[in-house]
Image (cartoon, rainbow, N blue to C red; front, side, top):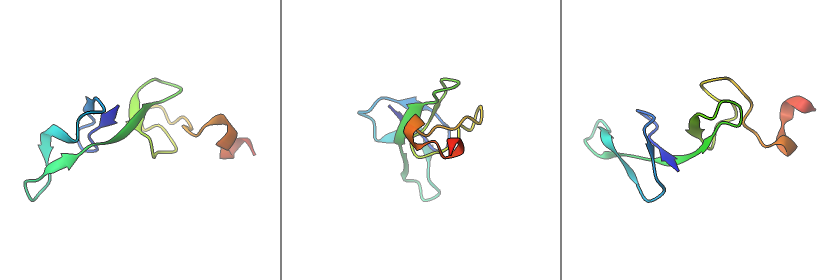
Length: 68
């Protein structure tokens, strides 16, 4: 699963660029890897520590810094 960092449209793994967005220079916006938030189920970037929708910690249970 991939997501556009601008419009948040979700695409399958075979896609590379957003069909709707462009960069300022007219080039396509490259999609980034995505995952589901373990708390609310919304699609978010894989590199975020907190869900932008519900605020949940998205680190794996073994890496949860808040539980230390």
